[in-house]
Each structure stands twice: as C-alpha cells, then as structure tokens.
Amino acid sequence: MLENLNELVRENVQETVVNNSEIPNEHNEAVIQAASGSIFDSLKDQLSSGNIGSLAEIFNGGNADGSAVSQQASGSFIDKLSGLGINAETARNLASTIIPGIIGKLTQKTADPNDSSFNIKDILGNLSGGADGKFDVNDVIGMFNGGQNQQPGQAGATPNEGGILDKLKGMFN
Image (cartoon, rainbow, N blue to C red; front, side, top):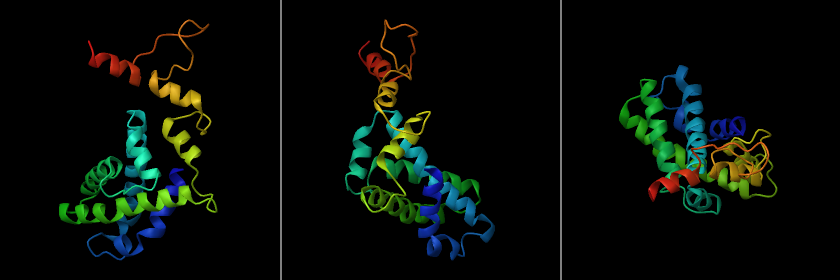
C-alpha cells in the first residue's frame, strides 16, 4: 500500500514539489516520501487508537480538509519538511495543498470499482498490521484487545494489555 501511496503522491505533486524553487531538487523524493509516510502513519494511528469515525469520514466521501487524519498528517509532514531544512511557511503551504488533495485522491481511488490500485480491505489490513496484509475480524479484535486474538479462557490465551478496551477501562477507574 505504501508503494502505491508513494506513486499517487508522485503523480500529483509535480507542480507543487518538483517545480517549486523553495524545495531543492535533491529533496524532491524525500518530500514525496514524507507526504506518503505522514498520510500512512496518520491513517494507521487513527485506526490503532480506535478513531474509526475519522476513517469512515474520509473513506465515505467526506471532506478530507478538516479531518483528523488530514490534520495529523499535515502536522507530521510539516515536521518532516522542517527536518529537511525547508522553511516553516513553505512547509505549511505544501502541507495544506498536498495532504488533503492526496487523501481525497486516495479515497476516490478506493471507492472506484474500476481502479484496483487501492482496496479498502487491503488498506485496513496494512494499517492494522495484519500479518498477511489482509483485513479480517481477527485484526479488528486485535485492535480492541491489544493484539490478543483469542478469547480469554481459550487454550493458549495470555493476558495482553494495551488494547482499546484496556484504555477504556482505565478511564473508569
């Protein structure tokens, strides 16, 4: 998925990145990697933290501009650009242009039955860390119980903390 996301960014940032005098040519590829990595990491973080609503918002054709995914990815992207020595104003301008646009393209491609470059099940599988890259119910259960796919009391089940349910339990103690 990350490779396809890199390609999607590369296809859509020619004018914004490659032809931008504020970005040294030797940093063009790093900027592309930073954009796709920021989006991927933000999607993954939203899923692993249980913020399914923000994912549903963008993948159901919602506005990517103000979404939690877009805001988080933009912040990460700005930080990565800063690490490349790109000034803050340029970084903010790039983030506000690139990130929502790429998230919008990603969701369009995911929804397009004639485009097989992105599949929502594969995306969720990659984001959830499914060993096989596929998304299934066990991956969802793993997100809620810290990676423990077996129910308590089953042979081989071991306690595992850190899942969403453990975090929710901590709120009520």
